[in-house]
Image (tube, rainbow, N blue to C red; front, side):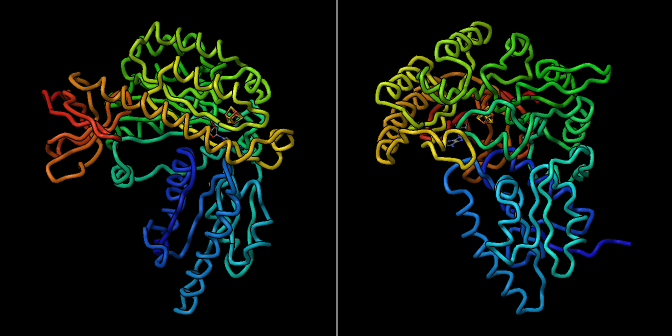
Length: 453
Ligand code: 5AD
Ligand code: SF4
């Protein structure tokens, strides 16, 4: 019997892993008759896929849930039922508290349990509320439905695949080890199967995701453990897969074989997101990062030795408890030394349950803002210089979508820069050589040099 046709609205917050989870929730619900909609008022099921990493995450979700409740009430007045689900890391962290604070919520589902959504929805028929924030023993990924080819095609030529979840590092500012749980890696065959399926439906670039992706150690078919480097080599053999990327990495898990893969594997793109968080050894120590500024710089030097053109990216936290002007200056110095292609800055925010929240000497908000602005100026200059250095060069661009204006298409360089060119839509999904002729604040402009697919 065909499933009743219903509409699903998913709003995802936070990181790319959450965006990936949102697509997998839609995939798991598709056989139940759920089709995605961008109109919340049409939705029989609303999922807020939440993020808990930074400031006032839970408060923002409760305020959003207030708005969703009004939609539910309006639909109820029209004789329509609406189920509201809270998923993701706020669901994990707040659990049943969510039902207490917002009675309109029907389901609370943690990041490790969303493969159970169809079952939970059946349990929630009527007015029962259903909670699942367990870290189940069964393999979530093994239970997920593969998306249809048309759904993959609608999501574009660049896809994400989670290969590793959770973290055992316990940086003192971070909630991830508590919300996503202990480190776990998916088996090689399962990942290869998913990537092959995506590529057969037109995907050309895959970004391998994990909170600590370079700690990957999944089982291979021989019963051994496979490193990220070996996985990259294996996946790059899949015909039709043009580009591989991975994020987010920890400096201490940047193994020699992974560095070597950057030299030898042409599918592995020369872009590396390698967060350092701070340039001060004192702060790195109290963050429990287990590396120093110098060991990070030495690592970057080793990577650049084998891949001189690699573009680097990092996250930074300003105003971690106890951060002095001298500590902050050390961060500015580190940024100046490395020269980043892109950077992400965050003002430290206390996450309940993490050691950082208990630390004395919390930094004033005004000091955090002022430091953030100074760091931003330095990094903006570096990003502009990086983009300007592309002008006059010819590089391969993977075209992903139509451009801003008619007759234009848009894609990415190997270094993750967005590029616009005049070109025909049939190039979308292909890699072509582009001469970069100009830059704006957020993207490059180029000219097609030749077409080789
Ligand atoms: N406060 C500010 N930034 C944080 N991050 C993680 N936890 C916090 C926090 N409590 C930042 C880190 C991490 C990125 C994903 O978010 O820089 O690398
Ligand atoms: Fe959080 Fe990353 Fe540190 Fe793990 S390594 S605790 S995910 S910041």
